Length: 158
Image (cartoon, rainbow, N blue to C red; front, side, top):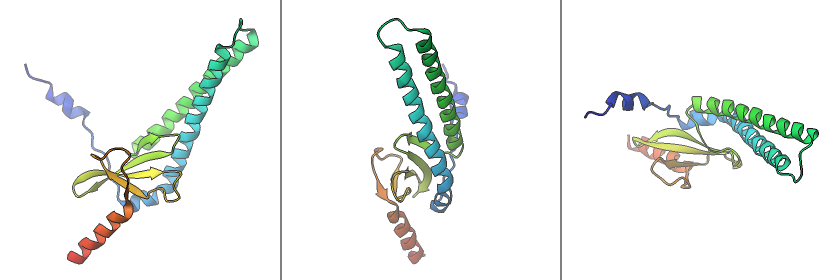
């Protein structure tokens, strides 16, 4: 029995690879979107926690408590919808969110014919200070200065 090879091909997609200059030029926009993602995620968590607290209070719920619970659940849904919209905006740029609360994302680039990632960290004074290969563990961090030195070394050899 043959496997459906066309289905596998359809699921593949190419991702945009960035240069360091492009990533640095886009930092204000990326920072803005990641800040929004963080705020929306924190709002979702807060509203869900509030709704759970209202739902699990002892005793029979009165009208006000039922309304407050419904409003908290609805606020959480709205925040989640805004989160998904901002996430789609980020993914349209082929930037991948790692942790919205920590403000971390990965920006793809090619290094020595391998997929690599600029590690964006919103809480670092230099948000694009590190990079990693795709095959590296997620917590691996290499200084971006290495890439710039490699680039300079190659121009001297040319």
